[in-house]
Length: 296
Image 1 (cartoon, one colour):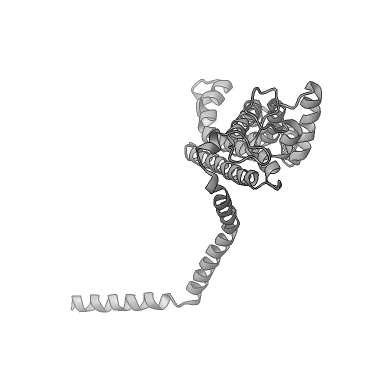
Image 2 (cartoon, one colour):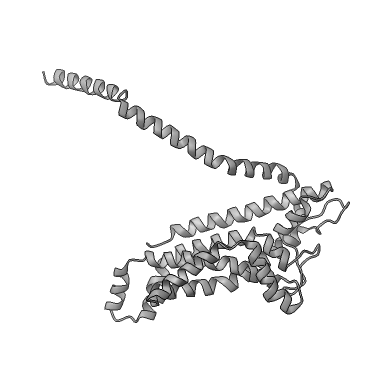
């Protein structure tokens, strides 16, 4: 009897489960799930099309010469973009040195030591600066550095990119520090640590993953900027001799070679586009990995 009742109970359960899949609520949930995945595919589609097109057009030029050869001039065959890669790393490195320390220190001040209305005004100014068009920043860097030194240089370009990176670093670092629970600060103070020791040895290490994420995203944005570099760095077909001279960069190379009537330079521009996209992609992946190491 017991086994017969169990069988009947299981059959009734199976029937109820089968009927439940046909209820209006389940059908609506299924439809919304399908719609959500459809919208997700539409949102990702432009990115996939851009990446696919860049890979198709630029992938054919990926070889050793691309990374070691000289930037080609008109009617020249072959050539490479190694000088532009080095120039891009130089400019972004200078921008990082100028912006990241000041941005993190400003975020520490805003989150840990400031009070009153000045904090609101500083954060408001940071938000405004993050929305300034990059071409305006290029003009500002031209007036401050190029017009002063009478030289287009990697330093001028790094200064322009640093201005673009600074608000991103400040905002992300400030938010990362605010995510650290207040109880952690109280616990550190309760065992006799000073405010400086608490920030340096407890709060900052706890938020370091998120801070690194913000700085890498700022670097990724700076690496793809073109307008500020046109006003400050110009362009050169030769390997960078110094940070005080015009140097080649990937973004300006793509800008100049994409519209020329010479097929070889157009192919080099597509290859440079692919390398630039890969650099940004690698930077974004590193930022995600750094975010996984956040304590809070």
